Image (cartoon, rainbow, N blue to C red; front, side):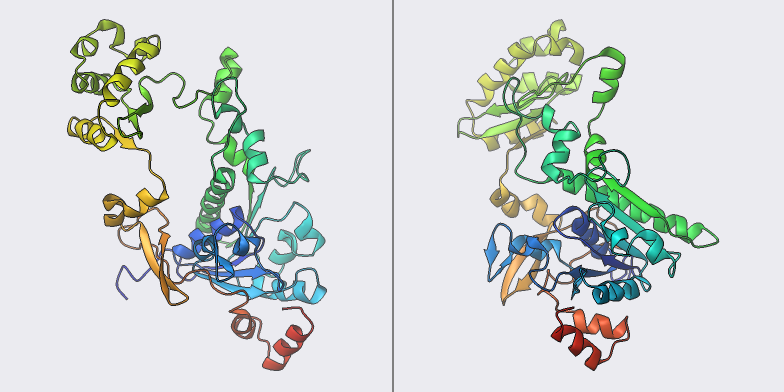
Length: 401
């Protein structure tokens, strides 16, 4: 085995319960870096993501990435016998990831205390909207709701207008990242702890959103300053905006460093502004944002977007065109960095985005795309739960699997 065959989570087994985005995305990351991930799905329909957005041959393309490197096992958690199977599988696992509403797993007899009774080393990672305790713990909390509650939605869009959301579930992704971090920290602690105990990892989507709100809370606490939406720019940093170009595209320029600002204005033919004391620091430039943005836009409007970017790159000024997904797929830099992995689905190639970070010696990889519902049920129940072919046939006939 070469270094690049090994992965940091080789030998770790994860039981993934739940559906949709936050918990399953955390499972995808763990599987990408070597963990064996067993995903439990309902026998009828499976994870709803299988049918969301762009669907090809009955399965969404989104699922191919979210379900990558996972073994799909169908078990009806609403039945006593199905829950018994999950308890048996959990006894052979290092990690459980679940994203049901708080209390649901306990009601099923699958809570942390239940599963750790026979497996004390189990790391039990939980993702919910508002956390496992507190007065709002039992509320449903999808990403959109939690982005609003956690403050992110308030600072998006333009002042005085209805706040907007990105066409993504950012709250879920942020929670997934916290779930991965928490799981890895708990595994590390277990590795170092003499009694090899596991622990519960409690991730709330609301709190994951709150974690990216920078200094907004502290600014209110100390100065009663509430950060507001700022449209295409950001409060207190000048210049940084999306500037129009002659080809009807926009270029984002971030030149808030003092020397970077000077190089930008010189490149734009405004040496006078580059040397003007009124613009020499960011604090001063904030007071003159309108004049600065007007001057930059007057220059960018005379050039195609790529010309603007190339000229600024040549003098060390950060700038980029606004890409759509087609642009990303065609981008030479991202392709050179190995950011698109090709798999085969239905006899045809399909590109999936790689999952970071990039590790020099033990990188992650996609072994296979998300597969058919229940494709691994029999093999997993035989190898881990020790069931016979007759027992599996009976469970299938009774709709348990």
